[in-house]
Amino acid sequence: MNNKEIVAQAVFEVVKENLSLSEVERLLENPKSVDHGDVAFPAFALAKVFRKAPQQIAAELAEKIDPTAFEKIEVVGPYLNFFMKKEVISSMVLKQIAKEENHFGDSSIGNEGNVTIDMSSPNIAKPISMGHLRSTVIGNSISLILSKIGYQPIKINHLGDWGTQFGKLIVAYKKWGSEEKVKAEPINELLRLYVEFHEKAEEEPELNDEARAWFKRLEENDSEALELWRWFRSESLNEFNKIYGMLEIDFDSYNGEAFYNDKMDEVVTMLEEKHLLQTNEGAEIVDLEKYGLNPALIKKSDGATLYITRDLAAALYRKREYNFVKSLYVVGNEQSGHFKQLKAVLKEMDFDWSDEMIHIPFGLITKDGKKLSTRKGKIVLLEEVLNEAKDSAFAQIQEKNPDLPNKEEVAHQVGVGAVVFHDLKNDRLNNFDFSLEEVVRFEGETGPYVQYTHARAMTILEKSGFSVENETDYALNDADSWEIIKLLQSYPEVVMQAADQYEPSVIAKHSIKLAQAFNKYYAHTKILVDDEQKNARLALVHAVTVILKEDLRLLGVHAPNKM
Ligand code: ARG
Image (cartoon, rainbow, N blue to C red; front, side, top):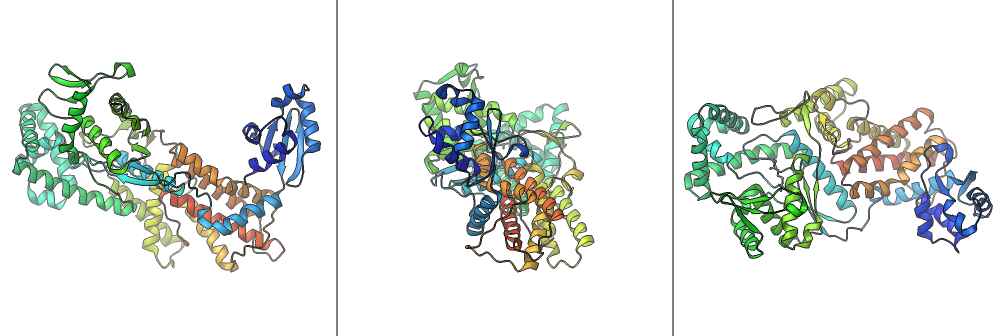
């Protein structure tokens, strides 16, 4: 039980005639400051029934409530402020974590329902951008959080492996490229060719016609075009997999846009049958005026399909293949118009499940205040960022703990963890400016700080020889441990909140608060001193290691035992 539930029960016992248990619970508040206790009950709601001033009601209730679980119940004006009995709560929380370990906060609310998560989804022949990194790590964390509460996540990498850019790439490759160069450095070379195409096309617009012609050949399954496309795709995937490997993130499906090439006719036919298609200057559109949206362009005048046509086919395919209870799209905020249109078209087609399609947008990463653009070659290479972070972690370990046995492995976990944590700790909709220095920083509110706190707590436990005994009482009553107990106790709600809001930052913020509270405790308390509370203090340290590690796990970050 959490404190609110305990207070609700106690209040309910004395107001049974007038309020239900859930009504009482809904009225409870979290006091802004610790001086006002742990939970507050405002008595206003009872003023009408009792025909008395709320102040008086509060005072009378305070007399009647069973005080067992409380240190004191204070009446401040119309409020009842409950101060929980620290010994009782700490023992309850620590026992539960000792027993459930990292399953503390698990739930079965998801009923094993499938949730598809469209995530990462980079474009072939281009480097994975910082935006794709965001989608990858946010999507991965959401999948971990959802599976903790009983859903079955299905991670789908909807690769951008189709579209007119492949016409451009083929032209550029045939004119200015070479096999050896692409083999040597696939993504860099393909990107160079892509950029070169755009530069040259500004002076020679005919190049665009050539590109269109090549893309048409590709759409018509011309063997030369297809072979080049397949080659670019597999070289690109190899490169992407290096990064996914570093992040230790995998996918259940790599069905990208090209996978839907033979599945779009069905969608177009359905749209026709439902009389939703209109012809507009030779193009086929779905009018979405009643949604306040621009029309969705389904087919161009030359018969070419579009990004949204493939997404319509993909949505349908996912419903049939996975029968999802929710279908998530972790894609940058700049595409929110696209996802509104996508949902609206499906709604028009009478697919009620479109209500369960949720776009999970995130903010932009800029560099020196400007948008990054592949077309202009203005990008940050993710692999470089990850390697840099790793090197920097290695240097710090070398300096502080040169005898650590698995230095390479830990440096990887800390470096990559720093990058991932940096991305996840802010509300996902916030924009931020990319700075390598900031990303590989280890002090302050960072991943390495949380990892370091975890390792430090592990060291204490190791020294103490502590082992969990379920029957023991873990009663603590000092103010510093209380702060920790409350953070531990709130964990199940924190997980639920992160899941409800699709917001990994809720978990990241919890981990930072818990690490800070623990470091404060550690600075003020002699944990290993032999007295009657020693075992309870160690149970607290143990619980902190369990929950910090679980927080990090839900973010996709390792918690090494030693650093
Ligand atoms: N490849 C796209 C991009 O990089 C993202 C795809 C997102 N997923 C989707 N189903 N549209 O912008």
